Amino acid sequence: MLTSIRGLVAASIVAGSIAVATPAFAQDAESDITISGNAAITSDYRFRGISLSNGNPAIQGGIDVSHSSGFYIGTWGSSLTSGTYGAMELDVYGGWSGEITSGVSADVGVLYYAYPDGLAGADLDYIELYASLGFTVGPAEATVGVAYAPDQDSLGSDDNLYIYTDLGVGIPDTPLSISAHLGYTSGVLAPPLLGGANDDSGLDWSIGADFALSENLSIGVMYTGVEGPSVNDFTDDAIVATLSVSF
Image (tube, rainbow, N blue to C red; front, side, top):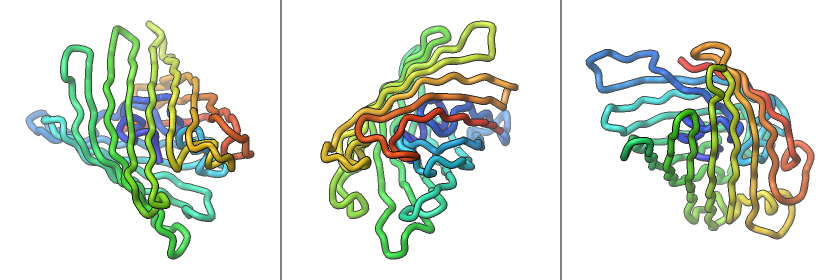
């Protein structure tokens, strides 16, 4: 699970999973198709501030195939530590992204969350629609986005709405960038509800920094938390470190 898979994989260094640019590893100069990949190891897989690895490290990676028209498809996976969802998450997504005017980009798509080895007989997989706008001014970037999971059996015949904003800025003439994230959930996946409270809405947030070790390798650290009850290795505040590589 991710804030918005496309936004996290490609643009957000604050949402907690992976956060590196993904240059093509197979791209013909005359081809309209670009294939890119990413991999990471993180000290704790946090989905919108909530741990899906029970506070344990996770291994993650993904592949994207994009066309010059802006359309793309991709897949992303992570190890989990969950008695219900199992040991693996596998996401598949597709959509369109591109610049709509100078300094402003858009991204819209649909995402399918799958848990291949989840609890036997449990309906866990679900679909989410997402859209975002990105703004770039000099070394600073901002993203505002929304993700909506409509009513479906795996969500208890309920829906879920997530609204978020990401801010990031690169420090000129250094390999360092800093970032901040704020998200709001209304629905069955709200942090207070997952933490055992009755409130079906709540915030998540993070601040972080990334250091580029090379063109394709970076290390990041962030502090993340959520609104609601603090459950150890689940909804408690945490410092998360991530080593990421793109290819």
